[in-house]
Image (cartoon, rainbow, N blue to C red; front, top):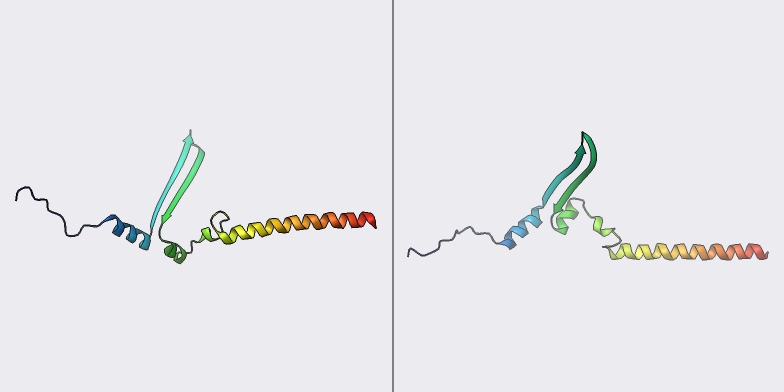
Length: 102
């Protein structure tokens, strides 16, 4: 009996902790400043928000929906803008040639 290990009844596993953090969210903030002789050379502000996508949307954070590298819709928008630019260039060349002919 002396070698028995006792465990707490309120053990929390990693999945429970992660679920709580994603549900409620967590903010980590920090500032880094580099000064020489009271002259600020560099200032970096770091803000990290960890939460679920639903919680982020609830907080009004949805930048990934318009980021061209993360959103399929934004990728399509960029492709359409590029196609539009190329078509305008072609149209401009055609108009220039027509003016030269006439």
